[in-house]
Image 1: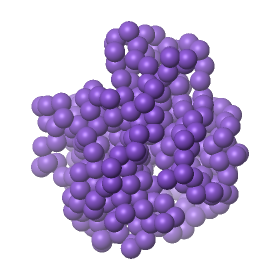
Image 2 (image 1 turned 90 degrees about the vertical axis):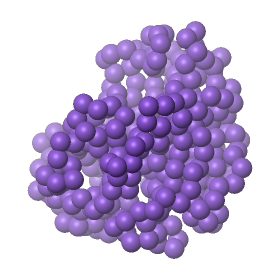
Image 3 (image 1 turned 60 degrees about the horizontal axis):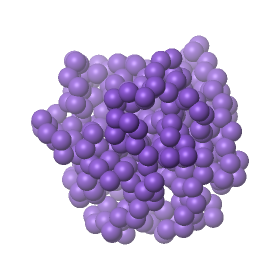
Image 4 (image 1 turned 120 degrees about the horizontal axis):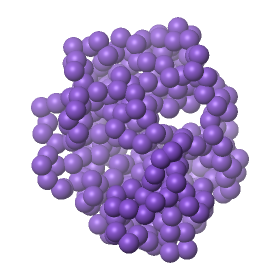
Length: 344
């Protein structure tokens, strides 16, 4: 395994690639989003304001990186059609409940030039008026599946306003090039007692959708990742497996990728052991092989918080897999963005 530094600055805390996104173009170009701000050692996150959204770009499949601040055009007209299959397309979804985003109604940003410029924020028009979402706050991060030039399935989460930890996952779809979105179904319904947030979704070779979801026990400390599947384009979902435990401290979200050989690869941080872990499924998420430890050199701060993970993962053109996450080591004790590249 090979480890690379995506972004690291002394006196700066950088974290949470999972909240923003990882995108790839032309077999070699990668772009990842994250949040950075002043480093202040304290209980919890060692992050102080002001913090800002940054992106890091690689032109060599993740071997080297350059950092920039995305240019955002706030005058983007919501009536403008989006071609989801455009060569330079990517989408970043915003909600509330995490650093760097506070849009209670939910919104998204679009780029058609490989992330050089972004247009938004644009609301998920019509979605907020659906009866299932009345009185709810959108807590979504970036997770979507392109289905055609005018169609895209977006995986979101919502909770009752003011109720932290009450998130549940649902999916919505646009078929009119992003001008409006329709509620499709709950993946984890409000009747489920446990927190469900931060899905990571792929379409498998069979055509069915599989999503891995961050879970936390209601009123307890147990945290895990659960997998759900839909054979009907998201109209209904079934629980299919428990992927792994993710430790205490509110656990960790999954990153999910479908590999060229059809396997699924799930990457996450395990906070009890302070490991970055990869797991593989040969049967579209029904079962999972033994975990592979990607990283075990995490350095805790004076307060002992295992503030790590929040990965994104993709397969490179050469068949190797790259996972991007935030981390700290004895040599680089301030949280930074790191990558692990390996041949599965």
